[in-house]
Amino acid sequence: MTTAILTIDTGAIARNWQSLDARTEVETGAVVKANGYGLGAPVVARVLARAGCRSFFVATAEEGATLRAALGHGPVIYVFSGHMDGDTGAIREGRLTPLLNSVDQMLRHVEALPGSPFGLQLNTGMNRLGMQASEWSALRDIAVAQRPALIMSHLACSDDPDHEMNARQLRQFQEMTDGIDAARSLAATGGLLLGEEYHFDLCRPGVGIYGGLPFEGAEAVVTLDAPVIQVRDVAQGAPVGYGNGWTAPHASRIATVSAGYADGLIRAMGSGGAQVYAGDVALPVVGRVSMDLITVDVTALGEDPAHLQLLGPHQSVDDLADAAGTIGYEILTALGHRYARRYTE
Image (cartoon, rainbow, N blue to C red; front, side):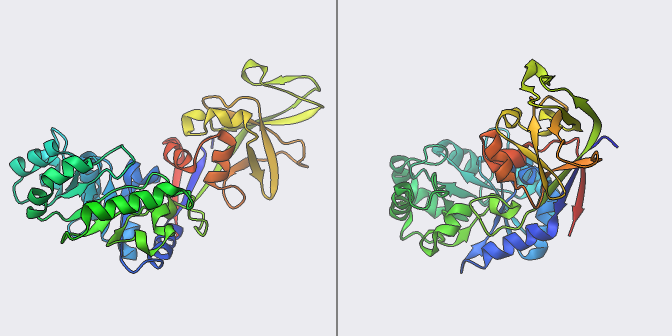
């Protein structure tokens, strides 16, 4: 078999969510956008619903419709992008709750779906989504009279607990929302870990559920094992891969592994000191990562491996991300659809 196997531990997903939930005295939702961070939103959401999660967050109405089909009636599904032009049907049929980001979205929603639930997103300094303070002050009384289900904002620097931006955004959110009779949410994974003052009424962790930083106590969720197609001897001074990107410093044994950047193994990891594992033995990736293949120096092994592990107990998504000069989020969401996916508990 030349297909790499991506094993997803659904039990670890549930336990990570429960561990984060136990750190708060408020409701804990879950962010399952980007197809559950690449791991399969329908499966992930059903696991989390069984664990007790009742509020889910997605990026778009299309993602929300997929999630509703998986979850059925009951759970609340919030849409970060709000009520975009053309979303009305999906919001109505999926019983979705858009998080409105502007006056235009507010008008669109109340005109197209009067009485339908909605939330509001405020810009407290990240300058990405949400209403500006000036816009909000003009709209606040009208919006609150419509009884929003949730008012939220998003922290820009919560993965850095000492960053002054966290306290600044907290103050801004409090100033914009204090005295309003509506549920409030500011914290994703990083904000949840900052402490109680950031929790408000609902926390919405994402990457920590899937085993990523900044949740250092997370259990590993994914294991990636890729088959070795061929092993060859190369002489000292022989090049390996595109552009002669690596030259053997001595006689070496090189394994060609069936996975590449088309499978989410970011090309930069080929020059960033990435490793893979044969059991407990770390082995260096050598040469450039290509579309379907990577090459690994297996000289240290006594016998040729049948497969090598890229993610697992010895190497987290954040470890692999460091080698590629990126973040664990990108590694997770990029994991390719060619993998044979196996769900375990």
